[in-house]
Amino acid sequence: MGAFPPPPVNTIDWSNVGFRIREVNGHIESTYSVHTGKWTPLKYVADPFIRIHGMAPALNYGQQAYEGLKAFRLPGDNEIALFRPDKNAVRMQHSAEVVCMPPVPEDLFVQACKAAVALNAGFVPPHETGAAMYIRPQIYGSSAQLGLTAPEEYTFCVFVIPTGVYHGVHPVKGLILEDFDRAAPNGTGHVKVGGNYAPVLRWSDKARTEGYGITLHLDSVKHEEIDEFSTSAFIGVQTGPGGADDITLVVPDSKSVIDSVTSDSVLTIGKSFGWKIEKRPIKYGELSSFSEVFAAGTAAALVPIRSITRRGTKGLGSAKNVTVSGSEETVTYIPESQEEPGPVCLKVLAELKGIQQGKREDKFGWRFTI
Ligand code: COI
Image 1 (cartoon, rainbow, N blue to C red):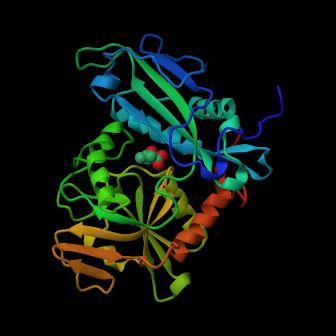
Image 2: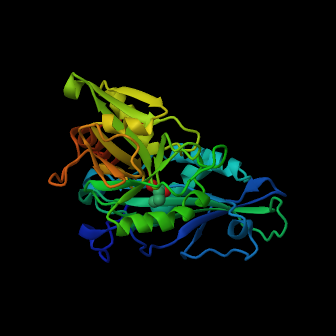
C-alpha cells in the first residue's frame, strides 16, 4: 500500500468537478438492532447501492434523516481534513430522535465519516481546485414493518462524492415561496429529514425556469418572518454608520429552521472580526434594511444573494433598494452589472474556506485530520 492519502485520481476533470453524481469506490454501513441495542462494527461496501426491504419504514413512512459535511485536501495534498463532523453528529442525533430512531454515537459517526473519506481518498479533489469531497451520512428504519410502529432495525450509511459548490459562485436571485409552506409551526422544520426537501422540488424547479437560483421560505403561520432558503440558511448583513467596522450579522430565530453548521461557523468567524451577531425573528419588512444577504450551507458554502422577489406587494416599495413591478416587489442587494459578492460575504468566505482548506490557522479546532 502506498502513502496516504493517494493523489487525486486522473479520471476526473478536476477543473470542472460540478455538483453531480460520480462513482467512487464504495460506502460505509452499520446497523442497529433493537434486540442488541448496539450498532454493528463499521462495514465497507464496495457498491453505491444499498439493500433494503421494500416494506422498510424509510421507504413507506419517511423514517430517515441525513447529513451533509465536507472533507478537503490541505496544502501540499498530503493531508485530508473533515470540517466539523462533531457538529453534524449531534445534528443527526437530533434529527434521528425527532423521527423516532436511535442516535448514532458521536465517535461512531466521526469514525464512519473518516473511514468513508479514507477509503475513497483518491476522489478528494486536489487542494488548488478549492473543491471538496461531499460526505452524506444517512440513517433510516430498514427492516420490514407494516404497521405504524417502530421497526427492529436501523441502518446508518456514509456515502461520499467529489463536488464543487452547489448554486455555483456567482450571485443568484432569490424568490420567496408564497404558495407552499415548508414546515408546520410545531412540525419537523428544524430537522434534516427528506420530508423537508422533496415537496420543495416542484417549486424550486419552477423558480429556476423563471430565472431564480434559490427559493426562500417564510414562517408558515403568518408569512411575516424569514425562515430559511430551501437548500441553506439565511444570513442578513446590517452595515451601521461606522461602515466596514460596524457590521451586524442577523440570523433567524425560528423553531422551523435547521441548525446550520455553516451559519454557526460564519457567526463565530464574524464575532472574531468584532462584528455584532443578532439571532432573532426577522420580519419580511426588514429585508430592505440589509446591505447584503447570503445563503449558508455545506453544499452551498456561501451564496451571495443578488435580490429577493416576493409576489404580492407587501409595502417595501418606499425603500431605495426596492423595485415594484406589477404585483411583485424585489429587494436588490447586488446589481446585475456586478459579478462579485459584497465585501462582508467575501471577507467571511475567505476565512471560512481558508480554515476548511488549511490555508488559515484553525483557531476554533474545526479541522479533523484523517
Ligand atoms: C447541504 O448543504 O449539505 C444540504 O444537505 C442541502 C442539500 C439540498 C444539498
